View 1 (cartoon, helix red, strand yellow):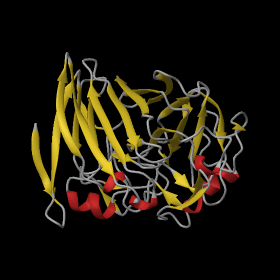
View 2 (cartoon, rainbow, N blue to C red):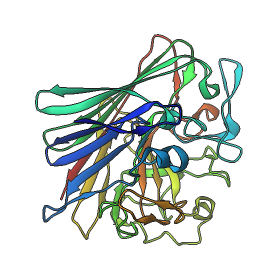
View 3 (cartoon, rainbow, N blue to C red):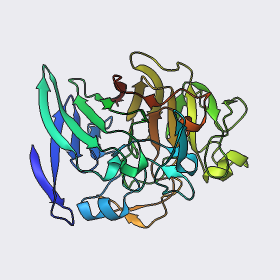
Length: 347
């Protein structure tokens, strides 16, 4: 079902699509590909488990990427600079001296073309956006298609595709703020998390990776066994001080894979809701909602405070264009960027 959600200042209409399948309900905006999800708990009661707003004005003026598609480059690029094929590029800087999530007007702030589809027992949406050569400083005209699929089992699958007419860098992801107890219900520190990763990428004070692939063993970043998010969150570890909590990339043990492989499990003990994630990507950014500061009021009328949600963003590594040892994010003409992430909900 399609309905008008609001209008941008220039009069552009923003629409909302409602989908349901396999017990999962989803709403998607043409603005930024923003989505929200409702799933049942162990007693069959539905709740919206992703943070967001109920009006377009707040998404435009205030949103810290709530539920949005991220590009051209998810995460940070140090000082917004990189060199590709011997040419230096300066992309938009919007996070101190660094570039974050594609710049001040990344894919999260663009209006996408949306096309609904049904395929067998699956339903979904195809979202299209063309990023012109030079947008936010990035080279090449990038044509992007993102497919949201709700399966008959209630899984949410995201398939990303992109092509370019000039060598460029690409790192696409989705920036959902999860609270499996329900948005606005309070802290996620009692959520249980497991990540299949033996290493992570430490950062400097600007949250740019140092280039090291450090072992998680013996640190607060060890989620190889299931543990509460708050268990080690207040340890006096320098990396936690840099991030004001957790805001780091995990190096997934599986590496890049041709098909999605299971890499993380998140569970809320109070509701019984569980999220399992699979991806083709080599990295996972885990952000513990450190910069939610009580100034935002969400769709349920609740104030969002520090630690009221977490993000699990499948990705290539931050600052990869400046780290030759990291998996490459370069896309060239004639190639197709492809990435898939699956979210599976149970209770």
